[in-house]
Image 1: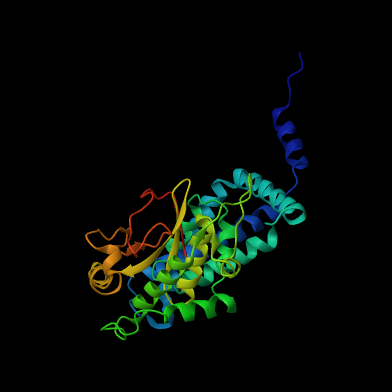
Image 2: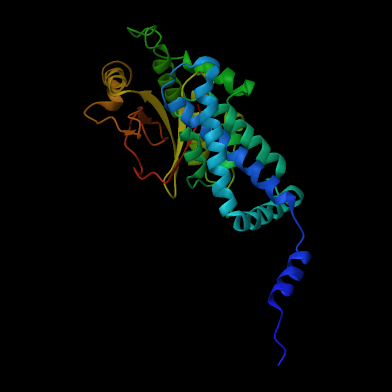
Amino acid sequence: MIKPDIPKIKAFIKKLQVKKPWDSIIIFVLNVLIAIPLFIIIHQNIVDPEWPLHIDRILIFITMVVAIQLILRLLKHFLIFCIAVYILVLLFGSVFGNYGFNSVYEDYEAMVYTMAYDPNPQDLIISKLLPFPNKSKIIDAVDYTNPRVRNYAVGAATKYFKDVKGYHEHRLMIQCFSVFKDIRNKWNYVNDPRNAEYIASGSESILHFSGDCDDHAILMAACIRAVGGTPRIIHTGGHLYPEMLVGTKADLELANYLIKEELFTEESRGKEVHYHEDEYGQIWLNLDYTARFPGGPFMSEEILGALTFN
């Protein structure tokens, strides 16, 4: 019986194996793409000891890159397979769909740019990971830099409440409430086409102030953002609605006073102001089309996803 020469077989197999330097290149590129947003989060959330030449930050980034590189190399084969599948999906999206390589580049660039100026940059990543229907379409539809949206929002912001005591000290909050009131007074609920989800941009909805819940949420978010406020759109499962960032608990007390005693006295008489408090203690007021005043009752308090527009 002939015994196989194991060492020779191993040597033969080794000769057949082709070295793939591109594996290491792909892993390193992925490392950098992961390290940049993580570094921004760490940089924004730890105290700066103010070392010369920012040596502390340089050491943190180098340590992160080395640690991530080791982890990615351990998962190399699985990652290479996932990346290959992802590239195929993007190729298909580039040719036949609306989301391809260019969209990924623009999303990543926008994410990093926004994170760099956000005191809680991790929120942006979390918001992108949470489930949200038609996320990219809704983000594009909140076109707060569109001249039509900006011009309407400026007019709506100064249409009401200019004679209220404390207007100059609390101008932003009061102007956002004025925007809410003007859209609320004009909005008409109209269904989407049968068996279709139609996403109208803010500049489109301004033409007739009509549409369904997502159209209202998009328009409200675009107009609040256009005058300097911070809106977000909440996904509850079968409903989308807008909220507005008020600030701290002290700011909530101010908002409660303005709503109930100055601006929406009749609408809010004997009623509670509804809000959500996020993990950072920030207060968000409900601006749904069903609410007669900022902080009106929720249709649903469940939050399955949120898109914040800083």
